[in-house]
Amino acid sequence: MRLVQTPLIKVAVRTAGSAGPAVVLVHGNLSSSIFWHSTMAALSGEFRCLAPDLRGYGNTEPLPVRARTGMDDMAGDVLAAIDEFGIERFHLIGHSMGGGVAMKMLLRRPEALDSVALVDPISPFGYSGTADERGTLCFADGAGAGAGAVHGDFVAKLSAKDRGLDGVTSPRRVMEQLYFKPPFVPAAMEELLDSVLSTRIGDEWYPGNSVATRNWPGFAPGDTGVVNAMSGRYFNASAITEIQPKPAVLWLRGADDAIISDRSALDAANQGALGNIPGWPGMQRCPPQPMLRQTRSVLAAYARRGGEVAERVIPDCGHTPFIEKPEEFLRLLTEFLRANPPARG
Image 1 (tube, rainbow, N blue to C red):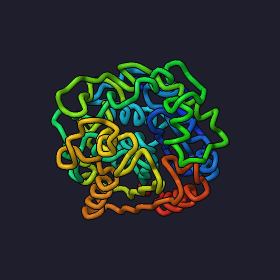
Image 2: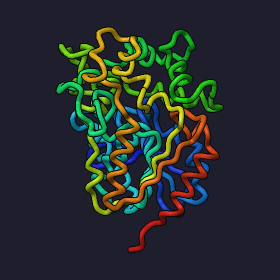
Image 3: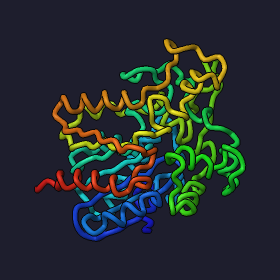
């Protein structure tokens, strides 16, 4: 692990391998670069791997996350850290929220990317609060998304660094039920739990602040914190369809992902449709976010405008295929990386 001082922020970067094309791996929410440890080890014989901790996670300097600019700021942090290593071109891999950061990096610096792999990424229209394939907000204030959707007991247990199994809101239980497809439990569970518990908690980090609204279900994204920054109110990366050049994109996901889905377990609208949150206004006003259909629609437009796109689905797998199904994941990923070698200057 190396702590890199950029003009704005100190970024902790995990490295593996010293030769070959560069690969930058961006972790998701409630995790850190530790999640990429085994993947980096497997790739390091052929590729030079770098995995930063995003702000508010792991060992990176915990500068505040602002809702309006948070995902852009994280993209800027990663690019600045890569610059400090003197790397001009690289393959980019983003998981979950890190897929959203990767999309923002693609918007900022497409000419530097040899390829982009989006692993169970958030939708190009953010996480929760949108109704259709165009990313239309259910409510203008983004109601139903943001920090208010996060269970208070879960936040309290994160803050207390609870490692137990008491209740469905314990971090360990949440990981077992949502990060992976049950009954899978990774051999490195304790190390991964350490990573989750390293998340900086508070209004400026995870989950952020929330505001009351008259719109269902009574909360809307506030102006600080990472969950608000991911919300459909503030995050939109659909303009990737317009960028030039267009590096090849691999969309790689687990077939049974409970977090990123057209019926996500964490989407308030889906919980309303299931009858778990009272007062749901119905499918016309507030349908479950079609996360997969949104991503497929944007990537189809990317392909129509000249980009190369591949979608691969790993069966019997949840939200974290590089840990649950590492052999299949690495096979698909390395085939893609080798098919898109660095462009010669």
